Length: 423
Ligand SMILES: Cc1ncc(COP(=O)(O)O)c(C=O)c1O
Image (cartoon, rainbow, N blue to C red):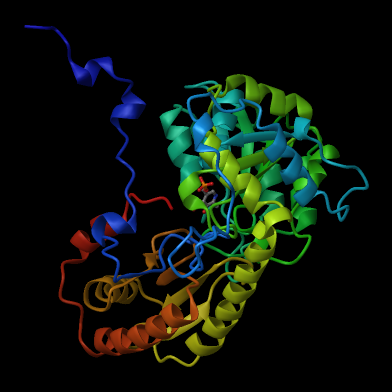
């Protein structure tokens, strides 16, 4: 009998992990559901495959005959295009170059790579500002790195509590904190952070660490909101982006981290040599360039999404039982309170609405009521015009049903179903 014992052999922080769960583990994509849960781009990618109606492909020409060769480990062409896209001179007269970039398998790879680069397991920590994206803490736990939480200011602003962050970075834990993860626009808040607040953390007079600004949703925000090019001015700034949201390419898994050449060099030295496949690179290059029309299509789809976002804000205000918009309007999702019969934001109501929408109307959104400062909230991804029409009708009906009848299911079971998810 082998003496192997998984419980004593595997790392305790890994044993304590739960496998990734998303709303779609509970509510499968059967092709009929309306999926407004994962902040994807409802209009799809900025390319379309050839079809009988349109035999010419509107997308990259992928040379499949070279797939027996390894991809470019440096992704220089893609990096040039990303630099051209993000060099706006809104934040600096200087220009980004490929040396400022790391590209990874989604921005999730950059989140994890930064942690491994700067934080010693069992010793160091990261600072996060809840409510925020769940992968920062999941990655911290995987790497046995501590978590220091400084909540955002209350809704609807959800800004950085700058005095509290600065005080924490001056306090007894400061020496162990290596990274501050700021999400702008925030998930689930949908609010763009103030540039001056980011500057205040970057300018901390004694803290020796890196400020990471996650801009996954920045293309849905004001033009020139991205701080990516600002990395040329700060040795301690990383700006992460992804093609999963405005570019509608969550399936190819392409994320980027803009930073100083020194930090980019560290990240590039750590990565698996061929982390970006040739197919991913080819599609990404098409999507972020003017040539071929990738960028034009992205802008068109973004315009359509923003129009639907504005429509949702107008129409949700008229539905009985929908409370306040709690976050901002800088993303492709909105955070709304669900109200109980007394008109108060309420998690029992929000959970019941979340479940009934999915189970009886085929509309999947996200329950966020257990996140800091999000009592009674659902996070709803903006859909196509048809999806929004169906969502609004379904929500109106569901809220009337839920608020008319007390929810029957056991609350504890519902909470278990809604926990342990990160997207
Ligand atoms: C704030 C934020 N950052 C990063 C990501 C992950 O992006 P990617 O698909 O590039 O890994 C998400 C995905 O939902 C997100 O919400």
